Image (spheres, rainbow, N blue to C red):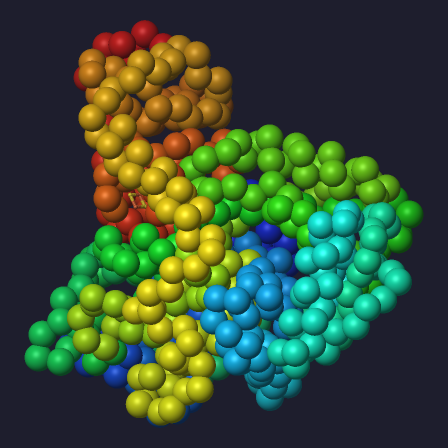
Length: 522
Ligand code: FES
């Protein structure tokens, strides 16, 4: 089923999403050129970065897009690519925190984004599996039904096309259900690769494997170090989720992992629509054809903060869940991906607070990254070109909103504080490396120091300093994606210590274990 021509390691983990396995990567990155002063440097080749670069180039700017790995390596390669006019932050929540006008703006923005993506697909003739779909949101108990009624009335008030119905699109018991019309789904990688090609055709410069390690601002010009090249630009956009450095946005967004399966069904009874339950965390369902074969995409239900939880157990639970409701013949895909929950429920899009002039960023998309990433590109495009944008004020990153739920967030960030203190000051006794299974990683203590140790299938051990290079927390092993994940702000590293997810910019330090006799005995 999988396309053998796909390029390995295209995503920030060892599991493979169906988007990776069904993409013909027909793109030629450009060669880096020193000495050019670009109008805008966009860092990050996900949907936000690619769309921003494309829009600015189309408006006459000279742009360079720098991706640390390959296009779609991060969350865009692992999303489930739903395009909805409702959000993880519900309309009643938006009403109570920001007012009804904000809820109406969100509803309008979502609709505009779906239209914008469809218009790009039509104009550029992109084969991105785009389909309009109905979407069902359903309750399964009294409490959820009450919430559903509130969502119905707030969504209607915001101008969303929604109605009560007596079906939910999936073979799962429900009490009440809502139907949202004109939702959509697509293939996120086919889409962003085509947009990136259009960007190049307009003269834009696309750089892959270009990691920005440092940047400075002098005489109105940003200067970004990328190892082999120094990139200069008048505007700098971090489309990397949390921008590098320890800044306000690190504290206002909590990183989460979500788990997804691509399932084949024995009886061919694939749901036609999108469907969402209201559990915490919620499950979501949608069909897609990958390499000509139908799969059912089922995700959620097991989400947890990055660097916490048990990823392998999460997959086991999700598999058990899907087998309860569907006749599963095979599960060809399982993968996980990262997203960021903003403290007050709305994304942060615009000028980086406390940053140098003309640095822009976008993060806190929750589970609505395709809509909000695209919306970010539209807003940042207007801010850079000094154009009015009706959404810009609502999403200003410098806003400080203390709302219900904030206590919960502080609790989550108390956990960040715990890691800062506990990890720096104590060297608790941990299991010895002898207990490591093949293909397993663990933090062990040796001689008063903590070491991140991974043993491969052949018994070869790789050792790293476990201290995250962002702000000093201790990383944890992610056995599903074979990565070292930081519990503080979601930084992630590969087995060899290379950064695979920001905000860290520097790799974990490798430790030469040959000098440690303890390890030689293993
Ligand atoms: Fe911030 Fe690791 S990501 S300390």
